[in-house]
Image (cartoon, rainbow, N blue to C red; front, side):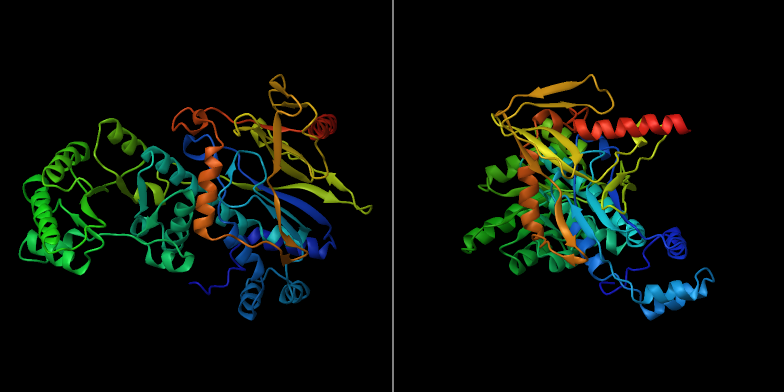
Amino acid sequence: MSTMNLTLMTDLYELTMMQGYFKSHLNETVVFDAFYRKNPCGNGFAIAAGLAQVIDYIKNLTFSKEDISYLKGLKLFDEDFLKYLENFRFSGDIYAIPEGTVVFPREPLLKVVAPIMEAQLVETAILTIVNHQSLIATKTARVVHSARGDGIMEFGLRRAQGPDAGIYGARAAMIGGCIGTSNVLAGQLFDVPVMGTHAHSWIMSFPDEYTAFKTYADLYPNACTLLVDTYDTLKSGVPNAIRVFKEMREAGVPLTSYGIRLDSGDLAYMSKKARKMLDDAGFPDAVIAASSDLDEYLITSLKGQGAQITSWGVGTNMITSSDCPAFGGVYKLAAVLDEEGEFIPKIKLSENTEKITNPGNKTIYRIYENATGKMKADLICLADEIFDTAQDLLIFDSIETWKKTKLKGGTYSMRELLVKVFDKGNCVYQSPSVMEIRDYCQKEQETLWDESRRLTNPHKVYVDLSDKLFRIKSGLLDQMGQTL
């Protein structure tokens, strides 16, 4: 699967539109924005992810002989167009928000500036990659936040919607804050920690629970987490685990990484009872890990009940983002380059206000409050706009325009979010490692106010338009209203 050619991972209409542009001799340079309209999972923000895979896709975007033969067999495409595809290479520019960055609705996560045939072709692949990984990274950030510093392990491979979702979902989960994954292939591909214990079948394969535990401890003395709920957690599992730990200590085996895992029952009750048993036996540093269909709400509830769990294995609900299975990213035309080399803004209208697009060749600035280092707002503006942080800055909601804030000069700072990834078809960006992205993501979330990180009813971080962009958008809306 790692060598699969993804060029035809596109919707048919991308190719039929390409042929239409080809036949009409329309291939002017355009700007497309990839963005989303609503934060997933009821969250106050999202986490950008998937850029490294987008880069790989663009670098390897070529039509093989088999691709051309298949397309020819569809009886939709003419020979001259298929001949053009034989030598196809992406030649445009791509800008993107780096992976791990906190992002918000309506701001471009990725911007494509390219001839329209090229920009059209890459739409589907960009969306499927960015939508999936951003969704799982965002869901994971919620789960990690709910654990309040406890480690979250990603255990979802067997419940993911197929191998790719499991592999790249694990990658996104690591970006979102997991400390490790059970997915060995993801560990190999992305150089991230792999973790795991054993299954109930291990226990059931031996004559008794103690022998199973003892054998496992002998094999893995430095990673000895024992699953204690196969038969009876408190009457059998925990006592047998304690017996093995005592024997390890008496034999001089260093107890560096050891503990128990609970996978069923009342986790709050069981963990408190198990903690007392371990402490009374002289093992206060033994880890109590838990699994069993966990999500951010259950973890929050268990912690509120005083559960003595410090390590959490989360699978199905995180790898599938079960309560919100789609990110909803879209890809919209924003500008067309004219003969004078100027980008002409384009806008999409809709009966739904939130579906009206922001026109023009744009960039994004993040505004921080100097006194706290916290995020104040994001500002979408034209790519050539320049701001002086020594001057006052008026920002306002692009829909509810009466909501205005004036930032005093010298009290705020600004950081441009979009970075150049491809220049004339050549990649000019080096993706950090997954663990580096993970660390960056944690620092990014620390710039949010606590109220914006709430799991329910989070405070909204505003994404505003610059005055210049707002006037262009308003003018286009007025103009379109007069011509409809």
